[in-house]
Amino acid sequence: MSQPDATDRIASAAENASKWSQLAPELNWLDESADLTGTLQTLLRLLQKVAPDHSAGIFLLDEETRTIQGQVTDLFDHELTTGQGGLAAAMRQNAPYVISELSDRRREASGLEEDRGRSQIVVPIRLTARVRCALILRSREKNAYSEEDGKALAQLAQASSSKIENALIRQKMVRLGNTEAERDMVMAQEIMARLIPRRPPEVPGFELASAYIPAKIVGGDLLDYVVLTDEHIGILVADAAGNGVPAALLMTGFRALFRGLIKNDFTIRSVFRKANNQLLESTAEHQFVSAFYGGLDTSTQRLIYVNGGHVPPLLIRPGQPVRKLEIGGPVLGILPSASYHEDSVVLHPHDIVVCFSDGLSEAENAAGEVFDAGRIQQVVEANQSRSAKGICSTLQEEALRFIGAGPRDDLTICVLKFP
Image (cartoon, rainbow, N blue to C red; front, top):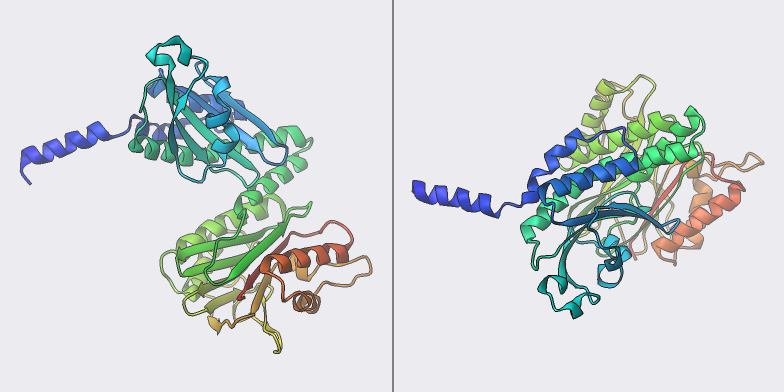
C-alpha cells in the first residue's frame, strides 16, 4: 500500500468514527458513591457534552412494581414517549440498538421542515432480570444516527450498566436497610440476582428449565449457562460456603473465573484444577465452592461433566436405576494441587437430568424429615411425561409444600430433558 493510500484510509476511518466513541473512557471518572439520580444525570451530561443539540433520556422500568423512573435533558419531548417512541417497547428491545424516524403529528401542520420529524436511537442497557433500562437519544435532523453511532452507544451502554446497577443497589439499601446488617443483606440479594439468568437458552433437540428461590438469609447458590458454540452448551451449578455479602462476592468472582477458563478451550478437568488453585490463592481459609459443570454436545447427545464436591445431579432414565453424576473431585479452594476427573454419559430419548443445590436436597420440614434425593426422584418419575419446565415447576412446588414455609437456604433447580 502506498503512503497516500494509507493516509487516506486513516483519514476516512477518523471521519467515519462515531463522536460517541470518546465517551466510554470518561465513565472511569464517574462518582461511585453517587445515588441513582446523580448517576443518570452525570451520564446525560456526558452525552450533551458531545452533542448539545440532541435530547436524551435514560429510563428504568421495574417489571415487578410496573413503575418507571428516569432522567431527561431539557429538550427531551415527553409527549413522544408513547406510540412509536414508547418507553416499554424501547426497554424490551433485544437488539443492541434501534434507529428510527419519528413523526410529530402535533407539529406537522406548521409546515416547517424542522417540525415534521425526529430521528431517534434506542439503546437497551442490560441490568437485572427485574429492572430494564434504555438510553434514548433524539435529534431534529433526519437520518441523524448511523450504524457506527449505534455500535458506539451500545458500547457506552455496556460500560455504564455496572454504574447504574451499583446506584440501584445503593438506592435500595437506603430505602430498605435500617441497620448495617439489613443493608448488607440487600446488597447480597442484589449481587446474586445479577448472576442468575432470567431464562435458559434454547438447546436444539433438548428442553431446559430452571428455578431459583433465594432464602431470606442469602446463600451463595449459582446457576449459569455457558453457550460455547451452536452445538455446545455448559450448565454450571455451584454453591459458595457461607451466606450474605461474603458468599455473594465469592460467587461473583468464581463465576467470572470459571467463565474465563472454560472459554479458553481447556478440558473441564483442567478448568476445575485451575479454578481450585486460583481460589486457594485469593480466598480466606474458610471460603470454598462446590460446583458441578456439564458440557452437552447436542450433535452427539454426550454430556461430559466434572463434579467438584457438589450435590450429585440425578440422571433418571425410564426403566433403569437412577444414576448419580458424582465423578470429579473435592470442593474448590481447600486442597492444594487437588486433581479432578471427567466422566461422560450419552443421553437417550426420555432421559432427564436434574441438577440442584443442597437447598433442595437438604430442605427440612417441621418433623425433621429431609427432601432428599429419593423424594426428588419420586417427584420427577411421577411427572416424567411432562416438559422440563413442568417438571421443574412441580419440584419447586413440592419442595415448598414439604417445607411448609420459606426456604432456609437458597433453592436452585435445573432440569435438562431429552424428549
